Length: 294
Image (cartoon, rainbow, N blue to C red; front, side, top):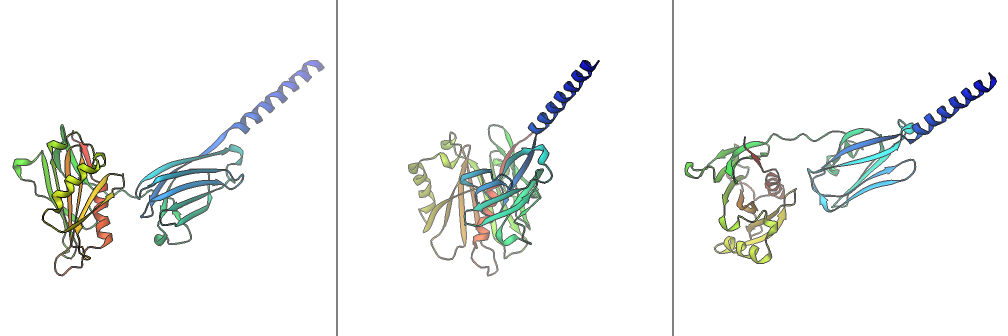
């Protein structure tokens, strides 16, 4: 009887040890959906363990664009959940470094805030940016029917100017505000049969780009430079050579379709275009999408 009791106690002890060991191997994982709303590219994001000093860092060689997001995770032993904290750090292209030193192990959205947008000492917010509703701008034929959608700048409206005879194969519209001092924007999209094999402007070599540049500089004195949308799509940027910028013409390509977007300063003695207004045009093009029609 004593032998059986001893054996039973031994088995209980072994099972208890196994349970403790199993629990010690369990992990609690924090999952963070991180959104860049700093207004500029983010060059890296880091999750630093406040207890053991280990670091999970993601570098963005081309920059995490404003409006883009990334998911990061961090696991710790489950027994430490509740007291364990992480430090979230990030750096923007301008050199601004944001820090939040008391991040819990949890599943949460995190918005990285711009330096001039801070309402307190906190350099992040636990919110997902609200997605502005996209406006349906028209329909374009891209080997089938696609609905053209875009996110209109606040206070602006869209008017479809596409002639009936070209609807379905081209699109023309104006984006405007009732405030005449605000700039106007003109969007045109049309198929160029010579470019049907070209996915994006990024795919063209210097010689091909130079040929397109000539079409913008034959009659006008302009300067031509290049920028990118938030998703890395190359944009040709054409503007007057004068110090005062009264218009900017953006040009790019999508699946053989030439997309041109002209930004013109407002009326009634308006000031020349500002950098913020030019960026507004780039943001609009970043959000322009072709959705397959049902």
